[in-house]
Image (cartoon, rainbow over all chains, first blue to last red; front, side, top):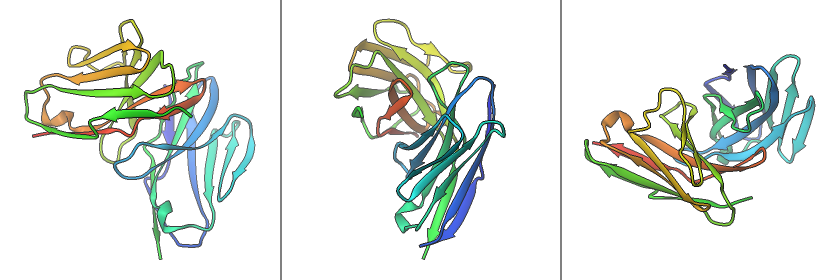
Length: 110
Length: 113
């Protein structure tokens, strides 16, 4: 089976930087996704990491360390609209169906 | 990416009735679609894999006779919640994939009273 762990909730200030961590235990790792999900809506794709290192995409960056079973999503210049749940999802065991973590609810306040 | 629609976006039904949720892939030949369920503040849990022209594959613990899946064409999969109960109230999301990329439908909020 898989075990994906991320904090339940985080708060941050508008304009600041926040890092959301995700740790996982799995066999046959094939990649890790980050999704953003606003309340009552479907998740939207943010990033996909399969190799170690940092992938930067505008205000959002995602980091992966396969040896540590660890990833983080970095959000810069936070905006109020970034308040959402952020889901970490892992591909493993040759499957192309991701297993999702519980999500981290991020609250951005003025 | 592909566009996936779901209908209805929300539905309220009485306990004991059945509800059908449609998932359509508007611009993508979806041989496989996935149905997820998400309870409040919980993760997306895979319920079943829907295969065009054949029987769905259900995850452990999901009752196939309660959650009927039909995938009769490359653009349409349906999930019917039969004899719904309040504990079936949840957010149901369908997705289809192209390699490692997943395209999500907007979800259907089901409330059973």
